[in-house]
Image 1: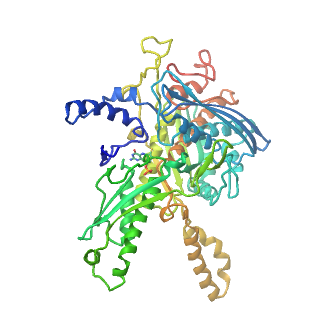
Image 2: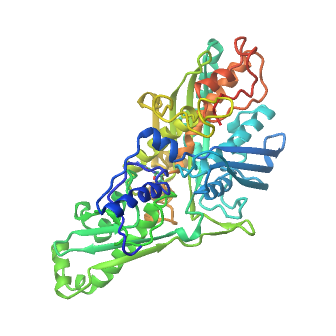
Image 3: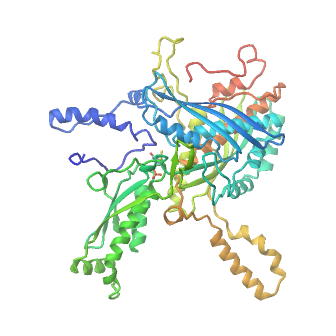
Length: 584
Ligand code: MTE
């Protein structure tokens, strides 16, 4: 490993698919390269890539849930199964994350979760944004929705009364602290005008037989850290040159998520120099060895902290010179240090503290902290064709003191639309014994002709993304009551307000500069579209007197939507548990 240097300037998007599967392609290219003693480049055709690289794992959830008449959940007995394909790859870790997330944001006093990885004749499935978390949470939201049908309430009411809060002990023993779920939920509720949105949808549905609208609000909590403890380590190398520029190298890979920008910002602010003076050239194994995968959304937390560690070391060495007199520029200071033979290069290191989980006892704290979010969606479906569009989506995320709100909002928008593909568009179809023209276990939907990914027209017509903060405007009414008081008290009160505002932002003490990880957490929030579709289907079915619960598998494709909208045309042909051909 010390003789082979792997370098990556950036990758054109990975989303998990290149976490382990890239190794096979690299190995295949390395053999001819070794024998011919020349560079070899291997580029897969799109269809070959889709057929062999592996996909997000499909999951099956079997649940038994105990609940009170008001919808309060008392117990959950859950079995989850994931489709690993023909090798283990990351399937076990993905199953584990699904198990950790199978409570989503709900306090459940008694939980038993059993997970099974299934060995099948499919190409090996692999990591994809969320890494099992979204699948675990989707199963949860399905049984929450089922409780709602049983007790004849809206699912959002069931969600609210079961929310976790500070002090909740999760099913694997981790204590919930600094929970911002309630604040996010309430801000979302007022931003989408929840009651009005429901009433408008009801009115629309009353007056339309073949088009139906639906709404849903979905919360999420995503655990930040690798659940495999040793992976929570990060290295960095920071080098200052005599012209005052800084070269940063760290173990993380840039894939469009803005990691290099965030890390460069951290170095620039540490040295108090412009961002343009900091350069990240590439990720390279001869600069930072033994790096973990750039995954689990934690890279800016970890590499940011490792870089900060290196910067602090150099600053400590420079301190005797810095304090000697006022330098007019950073390069002047650096030059002075150089003349004094001060080492201007440092290796930084970070380990995520206080994480660990014991699979023997089933207890521990696998996550450093949680990123919380909530989303609202309104959809309209055509009950005769199954076509749908998302009329509106509002997304709220708590990202602490965001390192870079522009990047983070882009991550949320991207994750939501990508998640929308997962819940409503992207369906994999496989050969099976009944369809001999595709070999069993072979992928049929291996290109844009048969596999539909989100396009610009699938973006919600109205799309609002917000980061959690409590503005002075919101706090104001809390203090208006005292405005009838003497003037001095008023001034004091206004000072308190400003202080409260600062305190009431959403800082996260557990990560670099009080920020929070963003990459994967918003992905699951697109399930608000799925449950809004289901809400619209419920309205369609109600018109023909079908009010009982019905299954709706992910993704809610037009085929599934159409068949679930039971009417005189479908009744002779399909049951309520309709299953599309070739789909797993
Ligand atoms: N954003 C872009 N543009 N491209 C990507 O490949 N991957 C996502 C997310 N955002 C990805 C992305 C996934 S799956 C993860 S785990 C995180 O970025 C990884 O980077 P981070 O740890 O720096 O957030």
